[in-house]
Image (tube, rainbow, N blue to C red; front, top):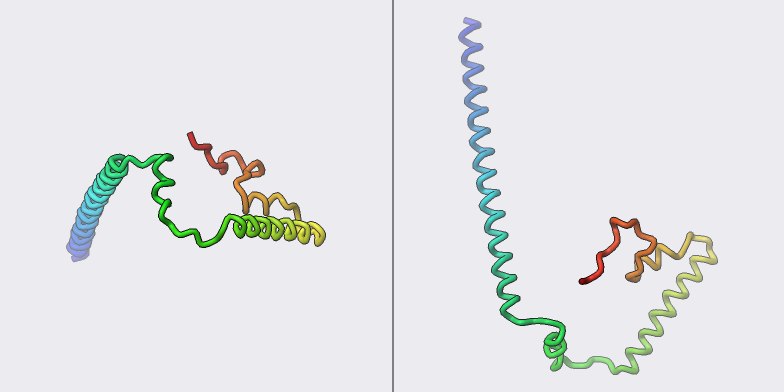
Length: 125
């Protein structure tokens, strides 16, 4: 009697394991198909971008008709204001002894000399 129950339990476990393997295989197949489709879509997008013939010389043409919301003079004053703001924050934090300004410089600019080498951005080719 106990032997029959053990055999039934083993049979049920084997059947469940077979279903789990089959489900895992199906999921793996679907993942492979999705990855293949994503790669194909990426190739199509890249091909269309290449066909558009976009480079450094054509980008300014795209913005030629865009309205100028601020004048160059206003833009210059905004640059001064933002620079003054960041310099003021740097002085304020330095006076209060809240640590080095290097973190602020790294966080707000492209300067990454203080970053670990693997975290640095790569230069454009």
